[in-house]
Image 1 (spheres, rainbow, N blue to C red):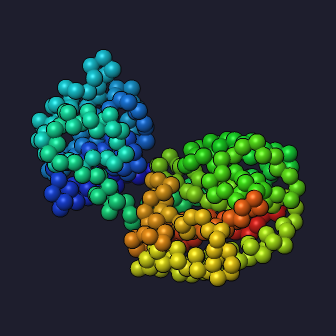
Image 2 (image 1 turned 180 degrees about the horizontal axis):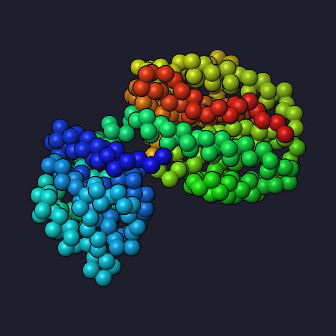
Image 3 (image 1 turned 60 degrees about the vertical axis):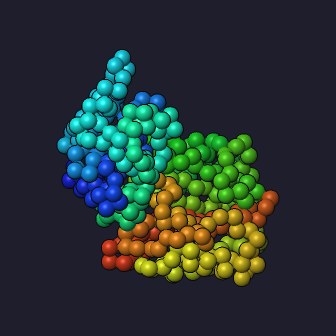
Length: 370
């Protein structure tokens, strides 16, 4: 599925609508998930200037280096201005500032913009005030459309396939680094990109939630934790975690896992439209603590996914987010016993327009034994 020009156009129009409500004169979007959201452009131009600008009258321009390969549909969204390395973008920006009447006005700038580029735009546009674009984009991106949920679902399906393939790869003697490399190769073979560097942790290393794969060799009796996500051609991501085990798990591991999955399921049963994200996190913490493992909680219960691996809603004790129709997020509490093992299963959950809770991944959450 490819998003239509109309979808991108409506997104820009909605941003302009909010721009007027918030009293701004223009938005300025540099390469980022927001630029993907508004245009479908995924290319990163690094130090070269590329940006989308839209004023409060709905006039839209895109400035890009000549070497960029722009999707064809972008020409139906904005006036295109290309610059070369020999000429630079200065004269184009001056023209746009005049034609779109944005010089010296109030701008909403991309949050993740490079500081050097921010200084450059301050010099060229002399904004009266600068606000973060997330004030606008967060409201637009928080609730996903049916098309967005389907795109995330497609990424989830690819990730499940890769996790199933891992079963055929894992064997005593291989290293964490080797398995992580094989996962990246599998992602590429499915025509996708890694959403983040895969987490592969053997044995005691699984007690570190964001362990970096190293040269630890897999041995019989080891738990294997794999956290992997993919980004599809539309820029939407998945984020799943499953645990494997070489041989029969110990009684201690089974006892911890049984507690874990009971608490995990309790969180799933608490998901509903109108629920506070902090309440879901509290459900997880109380349940795990009541079973005596509260000291082994190291992170929040989940986070939103979409064009970014971490975005609202944040399923955290200090979150002010509220679950609404259209939100998509992970559920991934964890129990991490130092120098022994960590237990974490991660699923991707969506709330439909009808308020139905959808578990996008169907792969077993049990310990996968081989």
